[in-house]
Length: 419
Image 1 (cartoon, rainbow, N blue to C red):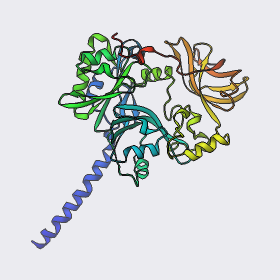
Image 2 (cartoon, one colour; image 1 turned 90 degrees about the vertical axis):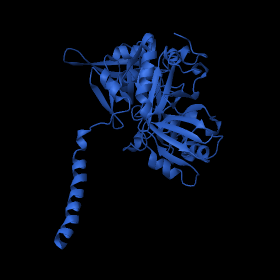
Image 3 (cartoon, rainbow, N blue to C red; image 1 turned 180 degrees about the vertical axis):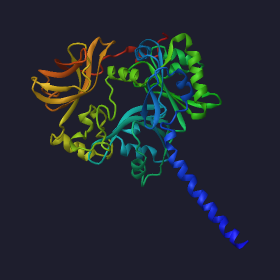
Image 4 (spheres, one colour; image 1 turned 135 degrees about the horizontal axis):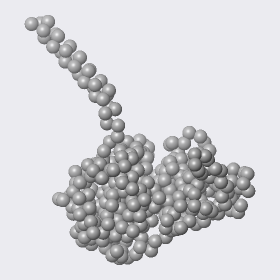
């Protein structure tokens, strides 16, 4: 009996050691996480063209990327933004904390409003950009491309504030396009017409609350909706049913990426390398070098990177400039090298396309100053076009142009038009 008693805990210990090992070894069975909308997206995914978005399985396209792009510009497009990193920041010092770590003046952001912002390390290099939603006087939601929880928690020391990640708990959808307003109205969201650009409000949905903001990443009339994860599928179904006669279509990232480029919007670790990801020192960028200098509010108190940013401006340490380019011809200059006078390498294209809306060949590029800043003449891009299994090198003229490449009045119309 004594031996049996002694052996019993030994056996349990062995079993308990095996169980976590088996669990650890089976991690490969779930290569990518699914979002709360995954059952609906999987049912529509004809191309099976997936990519990794922060550990989630997200579609490049669902059926036809061309039709998905034109859904944004002529109908209503539904895009799952659930993988976007979301932080809940609340407490008596939430405003002061966010004002300390981000570039813009958070005291000017009123409850029920959203603004686009960015945040830097102590050397003034951009860690990320994103949107800040002020849900109440003491409660905010910060959405970003990358994860920053350790940095946010370290920065919160001394503030009476709580920072928590809510990416998995909150599902998100972007509804973009000219009929987006009509879809929401027909879905029963009474009062949606009152939302102006960067406004947000709470609405009832399936016994819960959905937060809808008039925001987006397309430069078009659009909204973003945030709902508890367990109400995601009912929200999807509600929108799809209401949008049936308005041409609603679920889309993947390829179509969205084309629309954001036409709108002249940038992507972290696409158009610039964030400070935490940069390995080489010359890849780091300050806000002024990627077109975000307008965010810097020197009238407010101290914020992360303030001294370094001011020093860089005063001592002319800003070495790069991010510009919009218009390129001759119709072949996209994706990742093309930019030259001055055809021989001096001065920068690189990070995103490019032939724009169906602008009817021109457009690109976003990072150039070394003074090129693209004061020297804007005689710029060229080097494009390699595949023609019958052979690359042909093309040197095409480029000129610096203003962003956005297209500007749609319906994006800011109040009230929104009923298309």
